[in-house]
Length: 296
Image 1 (spheres, rainbow, N blue to C red):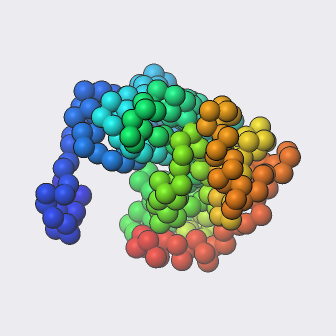
Image 2: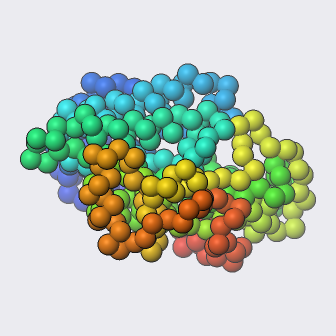
């Protein structure tokens, strides 16, 4: 209701419709996607420890729900569909990552089911990125909420060396727009983003607080990966992104030509991991992103 009030204050009321529904409900998606040109599929269950104990709930939303999005989009003639994925889908060790990897495969190969004889056939692609600073349910949001209530005296960290990829909300939005502008169908778009130790993030947001090391939670990695060594064999490096191309010749022949005009083949054996990243987010830069996002 808050979004409806905000958006309808800013825009013509006739431009937006708000549907209450669930991506598990195919018929509701069919209704919602009528006359729609672009779908950004961001719906998911994502809390790693919770999903380890509720596996089929994750499967029903993240996998079966994603297939519903694909089916409804193709049936309703949606022109472009983008899946929001995660670094946890690259060589997954937890159920959440595994379900998002399945969703990626469904989207990439969903292009085969699109009506290629249509004037504007439905094309489907993926964007894959790391932790969004200040997103709902994130560690940043939790820390800031606790900080508003009182000074944080003690924090719990899983491992002092744990690293993660971090991206601002604005840059995640820009990545989606980049994908929508360039996609042929079947690509996974990966941004070149910064890494940061989780311990350093806590120090930036709760300076001086006592750190209690509690150990890595079930299903967590010490470090994350955005582009695997196997994927690098069919990936192109652009100025600010990597594009992982489909291994199926139906898609990659023209795509290689297109992206190689402005990029280059990734090096043999390359992988993009959070602990071997060339660019690192400083505490000052983190605080600046949070301030500019009006999260402080």
